[in-house]
Image (cartoon, rainbow, N blue to C red; front, side, top):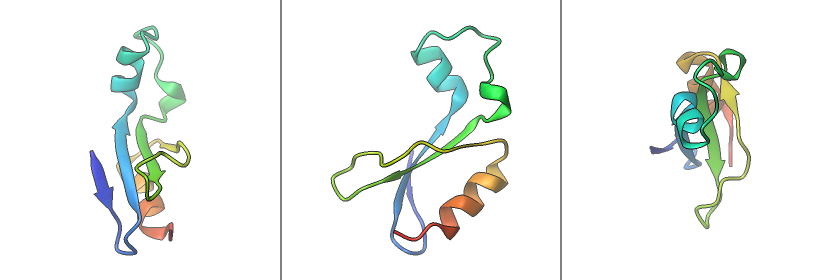
Length: 68
């Protein structure tokens, strides 16, 4: 899912379980509890960096506090 913060920066939200399944990682792999992904996207639609958080609140705070 693509979302945009109040500063106009776009992000891709991702869940670890989807990455785990797509990459065929073992079911017990939980990314050390970092299951909420929030990846800034540049003006060309490319992911700039990958960021993982343990809670939705941490992810959302990161998104709102990062200024493109």
